[in-house]
Image (cartoon, rainbow, N blue to C red; front, side, top):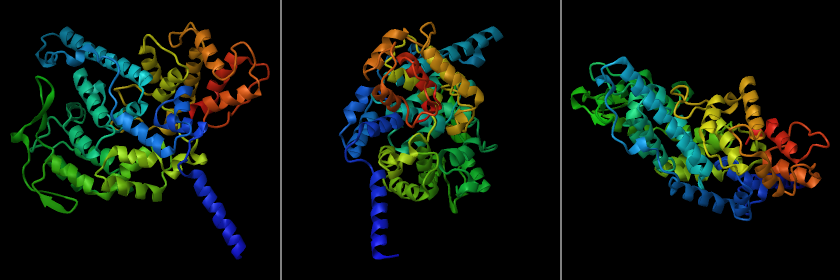
Length: 473
């Protein structure tokens, strides 16, 4: 290669690198991308507030505010109420059935409260992180039943969602909802239960053994011994350590031996290089792209580990990575049902008096809050979309545009207000400039279907929401 061609190639590569680097001054499209990925679909006011800021400044501000955020709405009354009577002490079948119905009803209150928090939050990254960890440390009320236990776990995930992963992992191992869900409460030295020991390695910290997790079945059995005696106090469903049930003998994990307890096992897990890589890759798939870049993962994971597993630092690295800003990764992720529903409500400025319909719609689309399908949580990405669910997603869009449906506010006021912000009108076909603005505002990538000439404003908006590209972020 000639010197001239070599210089040209280097210049081209450098230009490409600069194109993917975190922007020094955010454009409107870049600000929208950052807000859509780190929260839900953004309002124009949220976008405008970031335009012109550097990516580093914007990301640092988003992460810092999310970490310091507090909830906006009063929590459900059952949260601060007395612990319910023990189910096993109830005398009749009818009483036990009524007890269970009451727990499920209170769980529904928690779902509607959380949905309102997501809709109204000024720090949506805090909600996204709580939702992410809810899927990562998946626990279902269907098995746990106790609504107060589900609330306490929610509080735990919210408090540490952008905190320290080591602290979060230690806390979740003692969480009564997790102990009940993975059958750890009755694990004793004479019969260790391996459920939590297996899942804390495979799903919570290291990934599958066959994919580089670096552990064996013997490690799982030894870890199960370490967690024996970690139990629940029936009266108030709090954590209780039962020394008589604990196996205090020597155990060998990852080639090291000692009288390890559960906390020591967790620390051993976090010493494995696979832990930082696994968590980094999972958050990458949630916020950056479906296919992690191995080299970038290794570099970011190394910093995550050296920073003492600080989640906020990891999130800053991910949101400032070259891949996050690469044009090729725009529209590469699929909105979860909650993101779809909450995003539409937030972007259009709707103010639902009741969030229960949104909770039910998200569940109908495959994301039932407090009830992940199994311990693996929601698989996400293309698993959110199949023929039936895509049809239901389009029905959700139709509901938004039908005033008679409980999902929507009165059509004309919000649609007129939204269109007016971009120079459009509900009953007139938007001109080319307005069409372009609406497409950019509504879709992360180009529309997949043309919109017929003569389509008026409200119908144009509806057509954009029905486009397949609307399902992406």
